Length: 422
Image 1 (cartoon, rainbow, N blue to C red):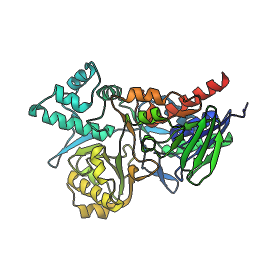
Image 2 (image 1 turned 60 degrees about the vertical axis):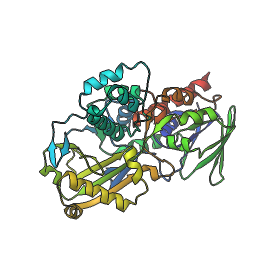
Image 3 (image 1 turned 45 degrees about the horizontal axis):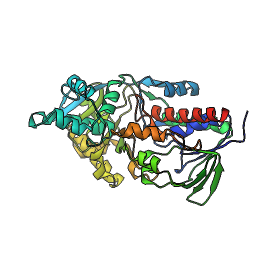
Image 4 (image 1 turned 90 degrees about the vertical axis):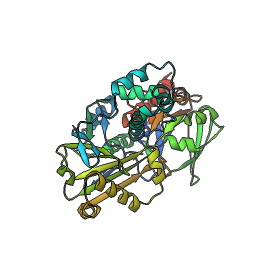
Protein backbone atom coordinates (compact mmCIF):
# COMPACT_ATOMS: atom_id res chain seq x y z
CA UNK A 1 0.00 0.00 0.00
CA UNK A 2 1.42 3.38 -1.07
CA UNK A 3 1.61 6.10 1.59
CA UNK A 4 1.92 9.87 1.39
CA UNK A 5 5.63 9.69 2.36
CA UNK A 6 7.76 11.64 -0.15
CA UNK A 7 11.36 10.49 -0.53
CA UNK A 8 13.98 12.30 -2.61
CA UNK A 9 17.09 10.48 -3.78
CA UNK A 10 20.07 12.46 -5.03
CA UNK A 11 22.13 10.41 -7.46
CA UNK A 12 21.03 7.75 -9.98
CA UNK A 13 24.01 5.46 -9.64
CA UNK A 14 23.79 1.90 -8.34
CA UNK A 15 23.09 2.95 -4.73
CA UNK A 16 20.44 5.51 -5.61
CA UNK A 17 18.66 3.28 -8.11
CA UNK A 18 18.41 0.22 -5.89
CA UNK A 19 17.09 2.45 -3.10
CA UNK A 20 14.53 3.82 -5.57
CA UNK A 21 13.53 0.32 -6.60
CA UNK A 22 13.03 -0.76 -2.97
CA UNK A 23 11.21 2.37 -1.83
CA UNK A 24 9.00 3.20 -4.82
CA UNK A 25 6.95 0.04 -4.28
CA UNK A 26 5.61 1.69 -1.10
CA UNK A 27 6.21 5.45 -1.27
CA UNK A 28 6.50 8.39 -3.66
CA UNK A 29 10.09 8.61 -4.88
CA UNK A 30 11.88 11.28 -6.91
CA UNK A 31 15.44 10.65 -8.09
CA UNK A 32 17.54 13.67 -9.08
CA UNK A 33 20.60 12.95 -11.22
CA UNK A 34 23.16 15.65 -12.09
CA UNK A 35 24.43 13.97 -15.25
CA UNK A 36 22.42 13.55 -18.45
CA UNK A 37 22.26 9.79 -18.00
CA UNK A 38 21.75 7.33 -15.16
CA UNK A 39 24.28 4.84 -13.86
CA UNK A 40 26.85 7.04 -12.17
CA UNK A 41 30.26 5.38 -12.56
CA UNK A 42 28.62 2.59 -14.58
CA UNK A 43 28.74 3.39 -18.28
CA UNK A 44 28.59 0.73 -20.97
CA UNK A 45 29.19 1.81 -24.57
CA UNK A 46 27.10 0.00 -27.19
CA UNK A 47 27.62 -0.37 -30.93
CA UNK A 48 24.52 -1.49 -32.83
CA UNK A 49 22.98 -2.67 -29.58
CA UNK A 50 25.99 -4.81 -28.62
CA UNK A 51 28.35 -4.07 -25.72
CA UNK A 52 31.46 -2.40 -27.08
CA UNK A 53 33.22 -1.15 -23.92
CA UNK A 54 32.83 -0.68 -20.19
CA UNK A 55 34.21 2.78 -19.51
CA UNK A 56 33.31 2.55 -15.81
CA UNK A 57 32.70 -0.52 -13.65
CA UNK A 58 33.52 -3.71 -15.55
CA UNK A 59 33.99 -6.75 -13.31
CA UNK A 60 31.82 -8.61 -10.85
CA UNK A 61 34.50 -9.36 -8.25
CA UNK A 62 33.40 -12.77 -6.97
CA UNK A 63 30.15 -14.47 -6.01
CA UNK A 64 28.55 -11.25 -4.86
CA UNK A 65 24.98 -11.90 -3.67
CA UNK A 66 23.22 -8.62 -4.44
CA UNK A 67 24.82 -8.12 -7.86
CA UNK A 68 24.35 -11.70 -9.03
CA UNK A 69 20.85 -11.77 -7.53
CA UNK A 70 19.90 -8.69 -9.54
CA UNK A 71 21.35 -10.16 -12.73
CA UNK A 72 19.28 -13.30 -12.22
CA UNK A 73 16.17 -11.26 -11.48
CA UNK A 74 16.73 -9.19 -14.62
CA UNK A 75 17.48 -12.23 -16.78
CA UNK A 76 20.98 -10.96 -17.58
CA UNK A 77 23.69 -13.51 -18.29
CA UNK A 78 27.30 -13.25 -17.15
CA UNK A 79 30.46 -15.26 -17.72
CA UNK A 80 33.60 -16.27 -15.86
CA UNK A 81 36.79 -14.53 -16.98
CA UNK A 82 40.22 -16.10 -17.17
CA UNK A 83 43.65 -15.62 -18.66
CA UNK A 84 47.28 -15.61 -17.57
CA UNK A 85 49.00 -12.67 -15.93
CA UNK A 86 52.30 -11.54 -17.44
CA UNK A 87 54.97 -9.23 -16.10
CA UNK A 88 57.05 -7.48 -18.78
CA UNK A 89 60.70 -6.92 -17.89
CA UNK A 90 63.17 -5.59 -20.45
CA UNK A 91 60.83 -6.57 -23.26
CA UNK A 92 60.41 -10.15 -22.03
CA UNK A 93 57.05 -11.55 -20.91
CA UNK A 94 57.15 -13.65 -17.76
CA UNK A 95 54.08 -15.61 -16.55
CA UNK A 96 55.87 -16.74 -13.36
CA UNK A 97 54.97 -13.54 -11.65
CA UNK A 98 54.44 -12.84 -7.97
CA UNK A 99 52.57 -9.57 -7.52
CA UNK A 100 54.39 -8.82 -4.27
CA UNK A 101 57.46 -10.73 -3.04
CA UNK A 102 56.94 -12.75 0.15
CA UNK A 103 53.20 -12.12 -0.08
CA UNK A 104 52.34 -14.49 2.78
CA UNK A 105 54.94 -12.94 5.08
CA UNK A 106 53.64 -9.48 4.30
CA UNK A 107 50.06 -10.50 5.07
CA UNK A 108 51.13 -12.11 8.34
CA UNK A 109 52.77 -8.90 9.50
CA UNK A 110 49.80 -6.83 8.33
CA UNK A 111 47.45 -9.02 10.39
CA UNK A 112 49.46 -8.65 13.59
CA UNK A 113 49.73 -4.87 13.98
CA UNK A 114 48.05 -3.85 17.27
CA UNK A 115 46.65 -0.55 15.99
CA UNK A 116 45.89 0.61 12.47
CA UNK A 117 48.34 2.75 10.52
CA UNK A 118 48.97 3.82 6.96
CA UNK A 119 50.68 1.42 4.59
CA UNK A 120 53.63 3.79 4.19
CA UNK A 121 54.15 3.97 7.97
CA UNK A 122 53.82 0.18 8.17
CA UNK A 123 56.52 -0.43 5.55
CA UNK A 124 58.82 2.18 7.04
CA UNK A 125 58.52 0.56 10.47
CA UNK A 126 58.57 -3.15 9.62
CA UNK A 127 60.56 -3.12 6.38
CA UNK A 128 63.13 -0.33 6.88
CA UNK A 129 66.17 0.46 4.81
CA UNK A 130 67.46 -0.02 1.30
CA UNK A 131 67.32 -3.85 1.48
CA UNK A 132 63.51 -3.64 1.24
CA UNK A 133 63.39 -1.03 -1.53
CA UNK A 134 61.99 -3.45 -4.11
CA UNK A 135 59.28 -4.61 -1.69
CA UNK A 136 58.29 -0.99 -1.03
CA UNK A 137 58.08 -0.40 -4.77
CA UNK A 138 55.96 -3.48 -5.52
CA UNK A 139 53.55 -2.79 -2.65
CA UNK A 140 53.24 0.83 -3.75
CA UNK A 141 52.50 -0.19 -7.36
CA UNK A 142 49.82 -2.62 -6.21
CA UNK A 143 48.19 -0.25 -3.73
CA UNK A 144 48.12 2.61 -6.22
CA UNK A 145 47.05 0.53 -9.19
CA UNK A 146 44.47 -1.75 -7.60
CA UNK A 147 43.13 0.29 -4.70
CA UNK A 148 43.80 3.71 -6.29
CA UNK A 149 45.16 4.67 -2.89
CA UNK A 150 47.77 7.04 -1.54
CA UNK A 151 50.35 5.06 0.47
CA UNK A 152 50.54 7.82 3.07
CA UNK A 153 46.77 7.66 3.70
CA UNK A 154 45.51 4.10 3.12
CA UNK A 155 44.71 1.80 6.06
CA UNK A 156 46.74 -1.38 6.56
CA UNK A 157 43.86 -3.15 8.30
CA UNK A 158 41.48 -2.32 5.44
CA UNK A 159 43.96 -3.56 2.83
CA UNK A 160 44.48 -6.77 4.79
CA UNK A 161 40.73 -7.40 4.94
CA UNK A 162 40.31 -6.72 1.23
CA UNK A 163 43.33 -8.68 0.03
CA UNK A 164 42.52 -11.76 2.11
CA UNK A 165 38.91 -11.79 0.91
CA UNK A 166 39.74 -11.53 -2.79
CA UNK A 167 37.90 -14.04 -4.97
CA UNK A 168 39.58 -15.82 -7.86
CA UNK A 169 36.19 -16.03 -9.59
CA UNK A 170 35.50 -12.84 -11.47
CA UNK A 171 32.80 -12.24 -14.05
CA UNK A 172 31.66 -9.90 -16.80
CA UNK A 173 28.07 -9.19 -17.76
CA UNK A 174 27.24 -10.11 -21.38
CA UNK A 175 25.13 -7.01 -21.97
CA UNK A 176 27.22 -4.81 -19.67
CA UNK A 177 26.61 -3.22 -16.29
CA UNK A 178 24.36 -0.57 -17.84
CA UNK A 179 21.80 -3.29 -18.59
CA UNK A 180 21.57 -3.93 -14.84
CA UNK A 181 21.03 -0.27 -13.91
CA UNK A 182 18.48 0.07 -16.72
CA UNK A 183 16.61 -2.80 -15.12
CA UNK A 184 16.55 -0.99 -11.78
CA UNK A 185 15.37 2.14 -13.59
CA UNK A 186 12.60 0.25 -15.40
CA UNK A 187 11.26 -1.33 -12.21
CA UNK A 188 11.35 2.01 -10.39
CA UNK A 189 9.49 3.75 -13.22
CA UNK A 190 6.85 1.01 -13.30
CA UNK A 191 6.39 1.67 -9.60
CA UNK A 192 5.76 5.34 -10.45
CA UNK A 193 9.09 6.75 -9.31
CA UNK A 194 10.25 9.92 -11.06
CA UNK A 195 13.82 9.95 -12.37
CA UNK A 196 15.01 13.38 -13.47
CA UNK A 197 18.39 13.85 -15.19
CA UNK A 198 20.37 17.09 -15.63
CA UNK A 199 19.23 18.06 -12.13
CA UNK A 200 22.30 19.39 -10.31
CA UNK A 201 21.44 19.72 -6.62
CA UNK A 202 22.94 22.74 -4.87
CA UNK A 203 20.93 23.23 -1.65
CA UNK A 204 19.11 21.07 0.87
CA UNK A 205 17.07 22.93 3.47
CA UNK A 206 15.79 20.60 6.12
CA UNK A 207 14.16 20.10 9.49
CA UNK A 208 13.03 16.86 11.10
CA UNK A 209 10.65 15.14 8.67
CA UNK A 210 10.89 17.83 5.99
CA UNK A 211 13.34 18.60 3.17
CA UNK A 212 13.42 21.13 0.34
CA UNK A 213 15.94 20.37 -2.38
CA UNK A 214 16.92 23.12 -4.83
CA UNK A 215 18.76 22.51 -8.09
CA UNK A 216 21.22 24.72 -9.94
CA UNK A 217 18.38 25.70 -12.28
CA UNK A 218 16.31 26.90 -9.31
CA UNK A 219 13.77 24.05 -9.35
CA UNK A 220 12.65 22.89 -5.91
CA UNK A 221 11.48 19.49 -4.71
CA UNK A 222 9.95 18.84 -1.31
CA UNK A 223 9.77 15.64 0.68
CA UNK A 224 9.92 14.00 4.08
CA UNK A 225 13.31 12.35 3.69
CA UNK A 226 16.32 12.60 1.40
CA UNK A 227 18.99 10.04 0.49
CA UNK A 228 22.34 11.49 -0.61
CA UNK A 229 23.79 8.88 -3.00
CA UNK A 230 26.40 10.98 -4.80
CA UNK A 231 30.08 10.07 -5.28
CA UNK A 232 32.30 10.74 -2.26
CA UNK A 233 34.19 13.44 -4.16
CA UNK A 234 31.02 15.52 -4.43
CA UNK A 235 30.58 15.42 -0.64
CA UNK A 236 34.24 16.31 -0.16
CA UNK A 237 33.98 19.30 -2.48
CA UNK A 238 30.98 20.64 -0.59
CA UNK A 239 29.03 21.50 -3.74
CA UNK A 240 25.78 20.50 -1.99
CA UNK A 241 24.97 23.02 0.75
CA UNK A 242 22.98 21.84 3.77
CA UNK A 243 20.94 24.22 5.94
CA UNK A 244 21.24 23.66 8.86
CA UNK A 245 24.82 22.59 8.16
CA UNK A 246 26.08 19.03 8.78
CA UNK A 247 29.66 19.61 10.00
CA UNK A 248 30.14 16.13 11.48
CA UNK A 249 29.05 14.41 8.28
CA UNK A 250 31.17 16.64 6.06
CA UNK A 251 34.21 16.09 8.28
CA UNK A 252 33.58 12.34 8.11
CA UNK A 253 33.52 12.46 4.30
CA UNK A 254 37.06 13.85 4.35
CA UNK A 255 38.25 10.91 6.45
CA UNK A 256 37.58 8.47 3.62
CA UNK A 257 40.11 8.17 0.78
CA UNK A 258 39.01 9.09 -2.75
CA UNK A 259 40.87 7.55 -5.68
CA UNK A 260 41.13 8.39 -9.33
CA UNK A 261 41.79 6.48 -12.52
CA UNK A 262 42.22 6.96 -16.24
CA UNK A 263 40.75 3.99 -18.12
CA UNK A 264 41.53 3.48 -21.80
CA UNK A 265 39.67 0.94 -23.96
CA UNK A 266 41.23 0.33 -27.37
CA UNK A 267 39.97 -1.89 -30.20
CA UNK A 268 42.31 -3.23 -32.89
CA UNK A 269 42.05 -5.06 -36.21
CA UNK A 270 44.19 -7.93 -34.90
CA UNK A 271 45.38 -9.27 -31.50
CA UNK A 272 49.03 -8.28 -31.88
CA UNK A 273 49.69 -9.11 -28.20
CA UNK A 274 49.18 -12.81 -28.91
CA UNK A 275 52.59 -12.79 -30.65
CA UNK A 276 54.07 -12.47 -27.16
CA UNK A 277 52.12 -15.24 -25.42
CA UNK A 278 48.88 -17.28 -25.59
CA UNK A 279 45.90 -16.89 -23.21
CA UNK A 280 46.84 -13.36 -22.20
CA UNK A 281 44.63 -12.05 -19.40
CA UNK A 282 46.63 -9.24 -17.77
CA UNK A 283 49.89 -7.51 -18.70
CA UNK A 284 51.87 -5.37 -16.25
CA UNK A 285 55.12 -3.52 -16.75
CA UNK A 286 56.96 -0.22 -16.67
CA UNK A 287 55.12 2.10 -19.04
CA UNK A 288 53.17 5.36 -18.78
CA UNK A 289 50.02 3.21 -18.49
CA UNK A 290 51.36 0.13 -16.69
CA UNK A 291 48.36 -2.23 -16.48
CA UNK A 292 46.41 -3.77 -19.38
CA UNK A 293 43.93 -6.60 -19.80
CA UNK A 294 42.18 -8.47 -22.59
CA UNK A 295 38.54 -9.55 -22.89
CA UNK A 296 39.18 -13.29 -22.50
CA UNK A 297 37.30 -15.55 -22.94
CA UNK A 298 35.67 -13.12 -25.37
CA UNK A 299 37.80 -13.06 -28.51
CA UNK A 300 37.29 -9.34 -29.11
CA UNK A 301 40.52 -7.60 -30.16
CA UNK A 302 40.26 -5.15 -27.29
CA UNK A 303 42.80 -4.04 -24.68
CA UNK A 304 41.92 -2.01 -21.60
CA UNK A 305 44.55 0.22 -20.00
CA UNK A 306 44.46 1.28 -16.36
CA UNK A 307 46.38 4.14 -14.77
CA UNK A 308 45.23 4.42 -11.17
CA UNK A 309 45.89 6.33 -7.98
CA UNK A 310 48.44 9.15 -7.49
CA UNK A 311 50.34 8.36 -10.75
CA UNK A 312 47.19 9.34 -12.69
CA UNK A 313 46.97 12.79 -11.13
CA UNK A 314 49.54 14.57 -13.36
CA UNK A 315 47.61 13.40 -16.44
CA UNK A 316 44.05 14.32 -15.39
CA UNK A 317 43.92 17.52 -17.43
CA UNK A 318 45.33 16.07 -20.62
CA UNK A 319 43.18 15.92 -23.73
CA UNK A 320 41.75 12.60 -24.88
CA UNK A 321 44.12 12.80 -27.86
CA UNK A 322 47.13 13.10 -25.58
CA UNK A 323 45.89 10.24 -23.39
CA UNK A 324 45.35 8.05 -26.47
CA UNK A 325 48.92 8.78 -27.59
CA UNK A 326 50.16 7.83 -24.10
CA UNK A 327 48.16 4.58 -24.24
CA UNK A 328 49.56 3.57 -27.62
CA UNK A 329 53.08 4.48 -26.49
CA UNK A 330 52.60 2.22 -23.47
CA UNK A 331 51.45 -0.71 -25.60
CA UNK A 332 54.36 -0.19 -27.99
CA UNK A 333 56.76 -0.48 -25.03
CA UNK A 334 55.08 -3.49 -23.42
CA UNK A 335 54.39 -5.43 -26.62
CA UNK A 336 57.64 -4.62 -28.47
CA UNK A 337 55.73 -2.91 -31.26
CA UNK A 338 56.15 0.22 -33.33
CA UNK A 339 53.66 2.92 -32.33
CA UNK A 340 52.83 3.71 -35.98
CA UNK A 341 51.99 0.04 -36.53
CA UNK A 342 49.59 0.18 -33.58
CA UNK A 343 47.98 3.36 -34.91
CA UNK A 344 47.36 1.54 -38.17
CA UNK A 345 45.69 -1.35 -36.34
CA UNK A 346 43.51 0.86 -34.09
CA UNK A 347 39.80 0.82 -34.95
CA UNK A 348 38.14 2.43 -31.92
CA UNK A 349 39.00 4.05 -28.60
CA UNK A 350 37.26 5.19 -25.42
CA UNK A 351 39.10 7.37 -22.92
CA UNK A 352 37.43 7.51 -19.52
CA UNK A 353 38.84 10.18 -17.19
CA UNK A 354 36.33 10.19 -14.33
CA UNK A 355 38.08 12.92 -12.35
CA UNK A 356 37.33 15.39 -15.16
CA UNK A 357 33.56 14.84 -14.79
CA UNK A 358 32.36 17.58 -12.39
CA UNK A 359 29.52 15.34 -11.18
CA UNK A 360 31.84 12.41 -10.33
CA UNK A 361 35.34 13.87 -9.68
CA UNK A 362 37.08 10.51 -9.26
CA UNK A 363 36.65 6.76 -9.32
CA UNK A 364 36.15 4.83 -6.09
CA UNK A 365 37.00 5.13 -2.42
CA UNK A 366 39.59 3.53 -0.17
CA UNK A 367 39.87 3.33 3.60
CA UNK A 368 42.15 5.40 5.80
CA UNK A 369 42.70 4.56 9.49
CA UNK A 370 39.90 7.06 10.25
CA UNK A 371 37.40 5.61 7.76
CA UNK A 372 35.64 3.08 10.01
CA UNK A 373 34.60 5.84 12.43
CA UNK A 374 33.66 8.11 9.52
CA UNK A 375 31.40 5.43 8.05
CA UNK A 376 29.57 5.09 11.37
CA UNK A 377 28.78 8.82 11.26
CA UNK A 378 27.63 8.77 7.63
CA UNK A 379 25.59 5.59 8.05
CA UNK A 380 23.66 7.14 10.97
CA UNK A 381 20.47 8.91 9.79
CA UNK A 382 20.19 12.59 10.67
CA UNK A 383 16.91 12.91 12.61
CA UNK A 384 15.41 10.15 10.44
CA UNK A 385 15.41 12.73 7.64
CA UNK A 386 18.82 12.75 5.91
CA UNK A 387 20.48 9.50 4.87
CA UNK A 388 23.72 8.82 3.01
CA UNK A 389 24.49 5.91 0.67
CA UNK A 390 27.20 4.89 -1.80
CA UNK A 391 30.19 2.59 -2.12
CA UNK A 392 32.32 4.82 0.13
CA UNK A 393 30.03 4.01 3.08
CA UNK A 394 30.39 0.24 2.71
CA UNK A 395 32.47 -1.63 5.31
CA UNK A 396 32.28 -5.22 4.05
CA UNK A 397 34.63 -7.52 2.18
CA UNK A 398 34.12 -6.05 -1.33
CA UNK A 399 35.05 -2.34 -1.13
CA UNK A 400 35.14 -0.11 -4.18
CA UNK A 401 32.69 -2.29 -6.11
CA UNK A 402 29.19 -2.03 -7.54
CA UNK A 403 28.21 -4.57 -4.88
CA UNK A 404 29.35 -2.10 -2.23
CA UNK A 405 27.13 0.63 -3.69
CA UNK A 406 24.14 -1.71 -4.04
CA UNK A 407 24.59 -2.93 -0.48
CA UNK A 408 24.46 0.57 1.03
CA UNK A 409 21.51 1.67 -1.10
CA UNK A 410 19.55 -1.42 -0.15
CA UNK A 411 20.41 -1.01 3.54
CA UNK A 412 19.25 2.62 3.60
CA UNK A 413 15.97 1.70 1.91
CA UNK A 414 15.37 -1.05 4.47
CA UNK A 415 16.17 1.35 7.32
CA UNK A 416 13.65 3.89 5.98
CA UNK A 417 10.95 1.29 5.43
CA UNK A 418 11.44 -0.08 8.92
CA UNK A 419 11.41 3.41 10.43
CA UNK A 420 8.17 4.35 8.69
CA UNK A 421 6.55 1.08 9.71
CA UNK A 422 7.45 1.73 13.33
